[in-house]
Image 1 (cartoon, rainbow, N blue to C red):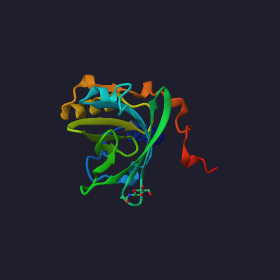
Image 2: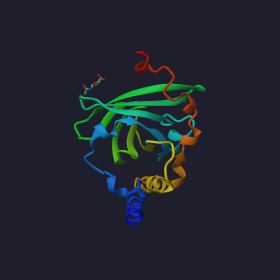
Image 3: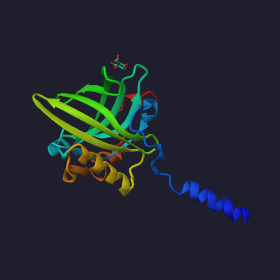
Length: 191
Ligand SMILES: *[C@@H]1O[C@H](CO)[C@@H](O)[C@H](O)[C@H]1NC(C)=O
């Protein structure tokens, strides 16, 4: 009987690994954002930005919080039918938790929501000439995420005025998933 109760108790404790108690919406500990990620969903109010040839059709591989409060974001994207690695150093702006980086114009990048062991949602404001656009990305620790999390992301996009039809499921269409981490990776050439 005791054993049965113990089993039941453990089941209850473990049955909801994705429950929302770990979700952060401010005061992020950037060291806990560090590590490997998979880009699952991308969305933009300018849909071309995240469509196949778009500048933000970009797959995050890892994020690293540097000691000087900058972020190192390693990504890959398809360029001319080939997989190319792109590494960005995003320096923290005068605003805490907001990072600036030049790419396709200039970008202000921040986190809008995170569960460190599960997912992180990045929000990018892109300024290109006079045009301003928004890009949101759902990054997860593993390539598989729950339908609930995808829903949550769509909700957040809607809050930013981005309709559901502008949310693209890109993970299954990652052209470089086979080659992940194995092309032109300077950091791993030390062996
Ligand atoms: C932080 O360090 C990285 C890597 O050395 C460098 O590229 C970046 O410019 C530095 N950031 C600041 C704000 O100095």
